[in-house]
Length: 97
Image: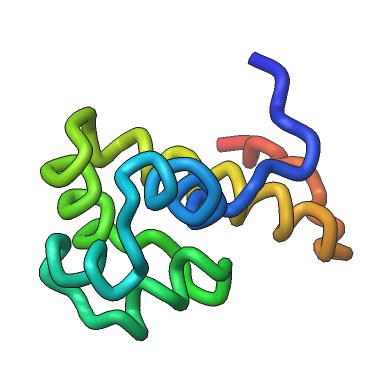
């Protein structure tokens, strides 16, 4: 499967699609999710990652699976790490035994 170019932070979907569709403010959504307004705000503004706990909460709240949210976060994190990476690793070589 081809990797997405510059995948969006999963908080973008919450901010741009989910909250408007539900007609909820960040405060109302945070209350329904059982998290602080600050915690949810950090996620939807891309300043915090979707944790396993948050993924479970989102899945219970919206339906679906927590893996969907974690997969989006992984794609986002991996793409950004690859853009910054300057690591040069030598390929593994089998030792003669």
